[in-house]
Image 1 (cartoon, rainbow, N blue to C red):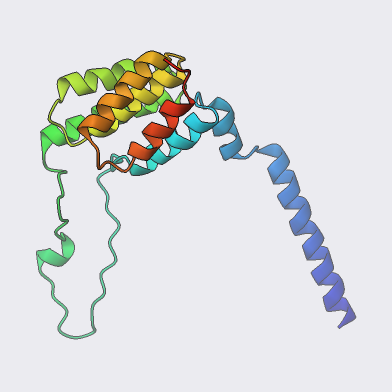
Image 2: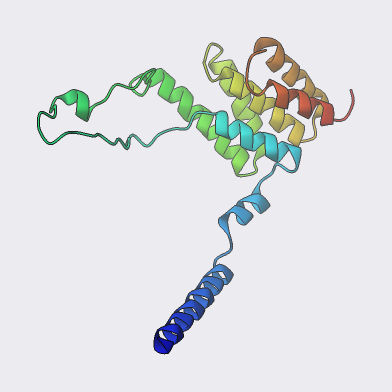
Length: 183
């Protein structure tokens, strides 16, 4: 019994030491991303929410769990290729829009707010009827605010709110507008 206790304590010490050393060797990725992010304070919080509501480009591989019985399981292609409601992966125009949107978002994530703002503005001009336009409008206004262009940012947020009154980010847009320097 005493030998088992010593082994357990020794393993615990090794585990804790290894974890501490690994943490010291490799800084937390979230901390690094926070330090590199161009958005600070409220802008960071709102940008994070924006990203969570924005569509993400998939790598083409879907992970699907299919449950089958032992007997009588279907072997049709419907199980191998399930139907996804509102799936637009075969729509080349939508996939190009998604690619352009993702590139603009990546620029902002990397801290290049000027290029990101231009990319979102270009997206809005290129795809005026896109389903992603409201998100692009929001991101365009947010990047302007983060660059210190308060007046332009407020105008863009106003257009976003007026054109998309039911969008889930309207409350965040109003909050950012209040935080920006007065007109």
